[in-house]
Image (tube, rainbow, N blue to C red; front, side, top):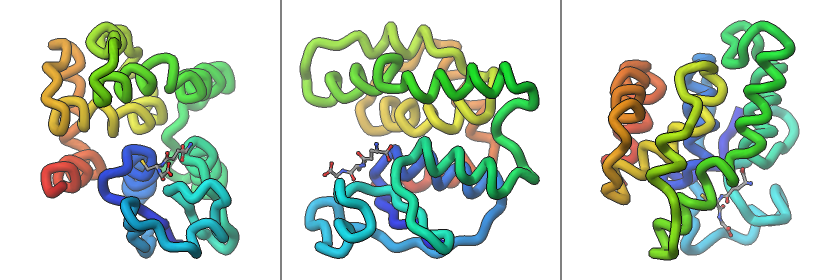
Length: 175
Ligand SMILES: N[C@@H](CCC(=O)N[C@@H](CS)C(=O)NCC(=O)O)C(=O)O
């Protein structure tokens, strides 16, 4: 398996954490986001990473996460019950509304409600959702200097005990 990846990309980080949780071996092909190679457009017409190659080429981080769940179900990230699986997927589907838009507005210096969004996140209920949201929470704290709401800070400290997340903290620290 091959992951077209960029260390600073939080969408790639979701996939890195999911792959690590599932203890899957893969090769990394680092894509320079500041000077993207032409060939990335042949893999993904949007030119974006992550892109997974598992014998076929798959872009879009939520789709890659779903694929990994289906293809490698031995270490599931989604809950067991179909209802809870559906609800977890809704939270990932609504990522932009629930966190992403305000994160990027904060980063641009535009009006935003990032702290309120962080405060309202439903964390600690599904590993799948936590993996999907953690990259932005890590970057908010460690790259943007945002003071996390206390329960989110506690959640992240506990989540960082997972080797998959500890590794991502190291990636961010090295940026
Ligand atoms: N919807 C995509 C978004 C991926 C994305 O925006 N990746 C960024 C890096 S963090 C990228 O490749 N940006 C290059 C660009 O927008 O041209 C996903 O979930 O995988």
